[in-house]
Each structure stands twice: as structure tokens, then as C-alpha cells.
Length: 350
Image (cartoon, rainbow, N blue to C red; front, side):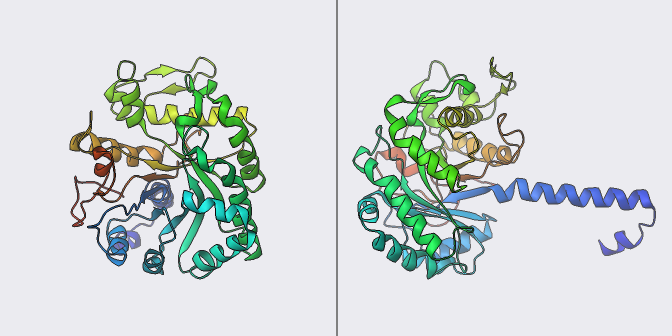
């Protein structure tokens, strides 16, 4: 390579090489750096965290989501340069909502003791809580977010770590066409104040996006190719803005953007905090479909959705491992890897 550069004396060749360098840098940032993988641990046969972190690094996976502040996992992440979504489990929300000092202790124990050696990027305060799901935690989410945020501010980390929560798309009442996307009426009272909190603090909304479940819920309306990113051409054009949709992932994502606009969150960014496809034990859950979906997802997110106009979509695949203690049976089969660290199917993360 050095010899090639030294033989390049013409200005036009120098410009071409410079442009090539910018192109390669752009590809690196938009593709590989936008993908993460969720590290679920509901299994009794999983490798120790130090081996898991080594596996992430060997596969060029630069981002991770964990669902609780497991100290062994956080310790293993020190110096790894892996960006992290750190989760607050739903059962912990009530205590953190009721007591600001508990949130201060939580941040001290799980954030300040590790940051910046562990690159904590977001704190996900609760997962898939809404009046439509896990409703017993609804009243605790926003107060817990506020207390965690205040503790982050007190630690001087508010410019470096964003506080959010992860929702699922069952909160949508209208999803077609995407520009008509709207949240269900019974979740607006819960979500609107959270959206305001995120807007005030310049934090993204975390959204779990699963075309697989869209296909299962609407098998007569949704084609497998549309869900797997393999449609040979456009599926539909949104009549309100002429944006063209070729895959279900983009349509779901942009429906949430449409709903955010109607709820006062037009400036919010969405981070896809989960997306994946099972490889066994359910309808259309095959190794080939799982590999096709996840590889196409990796290849796609650097291009953005029609609504994001080419801006890469930060996305976390669910999940790193098959987890043998999950239920129902197909939930055990979302893993990219078996617990012995062998791939369930070949994947290219870079």
C-alpha cells in the first residue's frame, strides 16, 4: 500500500485517493458502527462474561445492550471500547421512582464505578412498559427516569450518558401508512410526558422493532419477502408524502416517527433497541429466515429509512445467544450464537 501511494504523483490520482478514503471512512461509520447485539442472559449454560466480551470483539460487534447492571458483565467490559445500553430491570423501577437517594446509589454503583472504562451510552429505564404491556410498572417509569437523570447530572455525566426507556410497537394504534402513525389513545397519558422528558434532555427514544411479529399477526396481509428485506421492488408508496417502502422494518420504524410527531416529539431520534428473528420452534422461524433477516438488517441500517433520509439507524440485534430458560419455546431461539459460542448460522457484522 505504501508503495502504491508513493507512485501516485498526479493531482487527479491524489484527489481520487482522497475521495476513496472518505468513502471508506463513511462506509465504516454508517455500517458496522451502527450495529449492536443484545446480550440476554436467561440461560443456565451461557459462557462467562469475559468470554462473551471477547466474542463481541472478535466478531467486530461494537455495541451491546444488557438488561440489568450485572457487575461481572460490567467488569468484563472495562477497556473493551464496546458502547453499552445499560438496563434498569422493570422490578427495580418502583424503588428508584420512590427514592432519589436509591437512584443516586444506583448510579454510583453501576455507572460511576465503571465509566469511562465502560462506554455506557444510554441507560434504558424499564423495558416494554406501557398500559398495553407490563402495566403494573407504568406509574414508576417517568419518576425513575427523572431520578436516574438527576443522579447522572449530579455525577457530571449528563452530556455523555443519555437516560431513556425502551418501548415496543404495541403502543401504536395506527401504523399504515407510516405518515399516519399514531400512538394508541390509552397510552398517550403514559408516553406523552416521557416524550417531553426525552425532548428536554436531548435523548433518543428506544424502540423494539420486530417485523417477525408483524408477519405473525398479519399473515394474510404481509408477505415473507417484505418482512425479510427480500422484496424485489417497492411494496407501497405513502400517499401523504410519496415516500416509497420496500421492507416492513422501515415501515414500522417510520410509523413510530409519525406517531412521535403527533405527540410533540418531532425532533426525537429513535434507536432500535431490539430487532431479530427466531431460528426454530415457530411459524417461519427457520435458520435460513433468521440468517436472511439479520444479515439484511445489518446491510440495511446504514442506509436509513425513507423518513430518516439516509441517516444510519442505530440498531441492536436480539440476541447474542440462544437462551434455554426463556418461554415460550421459540423465544429460546433468537440467538446468533449457541452457548458454546459457535454460530447458529454464518453472519458478517462488518
